[in-house]
Amino acid sequence: MKTPTRDFIGYGPTPPDAAWPGGARVAVNFCLNYEEGGELCVLNGDDRSEVRVSDVDVQARLGRRDLNIESSYEYGSRVGYWRILRAFTDRGLTGTVNLVGLAGEQNPQALQALIDAGFDLQPHGWRWIDYDTLPEDEERAHIARSIAQIEALTGEKPLGYYAGLPSPATRRLVVEAKSFLYDSDVYNDDLPYWSPDYPGLLLIPYSLDTNDSRFGRAEGAYQTGDEFVSYIRDTFDCLYAEGAERPAMMTIGLHARLLGRPGRIGALHRIMDHMLAHDDVWICRRGDIARHWASRFPDPRC
Image (cartoon, rainbow, N blue to C red):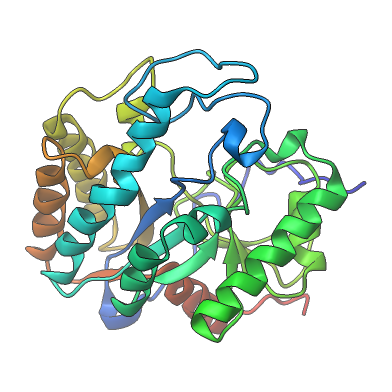
């Protein structure tokens, strides 16, 4: 079975000129992870409760529900999505939804509001689970189900895919689906690049450092919104300065159950306003980046 090739060299000292629209120095993509309701839970047929990416530090309960973590996730779907959406719509901005299929079924109203606001949808698995533990046929079926869901919601098949916790087979299954222009299950560059294994498949790096999931990590966790702002601002400022000669991209990962809390949402407002105070910044959707890159730098193997 073909598995992803490792590449330690990349573009090296001469990255291509991204030539972002409007001459932007930085392309910024906000990704809102729509996961609430798709996580591990015995009500979803799982054998244990969820433990990841939450304010609740717990151990899995085998064969039993954990009401605390369930309720913590529900805060995102009930309140956090709306608070984060207002931060975007108040400024006329959009981003990308990393959509866990089952979560979209649990709260279709909030999802439709994000679609109406101009967000594009990138499948994030049908479930918020580790796909390395799933049989290949089931993972294939999950991908197909996600494609059908997004096509029903938007009238178009999705351009990209992000498992988050992929299996060695995930990228091959993404290619086999014949729907996707890009895959986001990489973290190894500041620019998109073509897959060395699959001609015509663009890889658009995601980020786990410029990501509010660090509020929910046991080690190295953020405690305040100011810490998040400081890290995101420093990353942006570096890329903006470098962008005078080497334009790059930046992804910011968001979770409604984390950043959507009252004590943290101000961080998103400050981050957005800091970026908007700069000229030559392209705040865009992930599909916009993919289309631009494929047009400017078509894969020479295709």
